[in-house]
Length: 451
Image 1 (cartoon, helix red, strand yellow):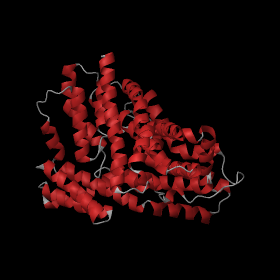
Image 2 (image 1 turned 135 degrees about the vertical axis):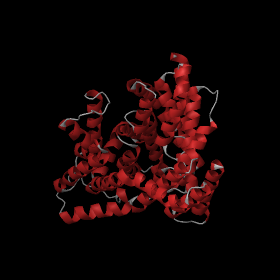
Image 3 (image 1 turned 120 degrees about the horizontal axis):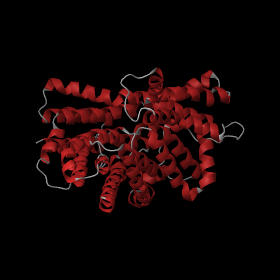
Image 4 (image 1 turned 180 degrees about the vertical axis):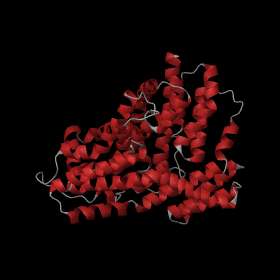
């Protein structure tokens, strides 16, 4: 019954958005309420679940998105994005632009949460696409592939780190195996897939999305635009702060939270928290892209206000996706998936991947899917003698599969690149599924070769 309700709910959501052109946020909330009723939830608990889902989804993202949009707009309006884009064009050339985006996204993606990486990279991607006169999606797909792979495969991201803890896997081994599998996966799901997508969904590539956060295109004189070094430092300032915290935790605290943290531990932890890292970075950007560029207070204020206006609807839609996800979890869909595989004789690696895929499709959250799947396959893994690091990657790759309407990342990609739901399914959803399949194939190859 939960699967029937889930399927009907997803079909209803697509119908409301595509056929009746209902606002996406409203459609998500309406669907969440009806699915909650269909799953037999107590009526007085449905509102509580929706509120909790929106709160959990937006709690930190409101800080990250708000400050990130302001930071991106400051860099763009000051000419920093223009400087970065023209420099990358000069260094890599038009033919290797996708590789430049992949490398930048991969480096940023290792240190940052998926959502933070998108917020920081989108203005740069748009600026480069405009300057190089290539479709924005031509660079957006490689960016999304690199960020998603790091999110699903590599510590210190929440899902792989938490799975490694659950399965007692060596984090260093997870990182090593993850990078080995990630490199071909990113190429296949990024630059290679973008060529196929351009033929299959030409309208998505022909569109010229107007993303306010990037600002409008204008030519900057070399004398008035900030230098490449300062522009990159400003754009990557959050990455630097979070990397400091990550390295400190791994080297000094060996990846564990100290029971009695010192003042230095607390300070390092504070500056690496995504919300605080973005705040500190914004304050730096106010100087580097504002005061240092001789902008007056009125111009800086206008830039910040325009940035916040640009993300209002995006935040509501992401919150609506969180509400839908919470209803599915509280309504028992996760438990139904777990019961489906009781007593299964499938290979633990394949089973872990498959459970994660089904949970991901059902619940939307990659982290929830990964953690639930890890708990289910942990006993089987020990009996079969599977290397825990490979199991972490198998589950992590399955947890990013088939992102669709109940996943916040789906709506972020759609809104930023101004796609229809159908176009998003044919680009983003396929991209995520390719990552999941490539991840599983990579795990099975490494397991056959080394174990």
